[in-house]
Length: 345
Image (cartoon, rainbow, N blue to C red):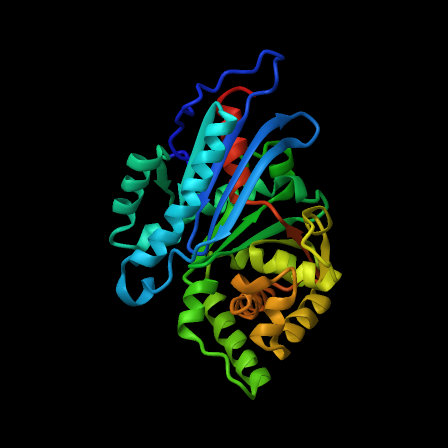
């Protein structure tokens, strides 16, 4: 399994325009919390030139841990978002489309049935990828943010239903991002949506609750990835961490004091870990309404941002570093890069 999903020509035929414009490619990522789409053209300098993007929180995995199934309400939200993506794809006529589904569809008993309906109704052919492929594609999508100096880079992808960890050697990735080996990888069943269904944030005593939560999460993360042989690089300051998720980008936007979310300010930002933890503490001290009022959090993430911060905090306790690189990129970009490589662009 290649990890970038079946490649289907768009209904528009995918031909280059009369003026010889670069061909377009589309990537869709249907996760436990978000539905995301990118349409981009290959670019020699930047790798990708994005021409259209879409992101909507659909909470596809809502209730999944208790029922083992995708709920009708969650599927309706995802269907609506995917219909909007299909319309945008129709208008852009990409030469190839990569559609991937992750944890919610992996674990739901009716996940494949839902995706079959999407294929029939909307023409979007989704592939349920493994946790390992998810980690590999996220690493590929973040390749351009990897610095050459460290011995090891850890890529942390906090999702709605799981958290993926991938350890890579920067020199390998920079030499050949499409086929660089993963030194170690692992997945933990810790996601912002599933955690929100298990944890109830107290009205008082929040600091003690948060500390106990992070300690419990860190204990669960200790053995994820079987990467003990890489621990010395972190203890000795020879490792970097890249965080790719809505949690990390939202916290960075809050820290930067943005009056509206700006990808150009956030993507690639070096976030001091002490400042990151202080930002999480600020969010913890606020009410849900106050969090929702922040333009980098909003209503959809108000109840998730602290829980995501707790997962990130736990990762950083197990794999310490002084700062993390914020990535507003990841799985979708990895899908696009692999699609483009297959088409010789």
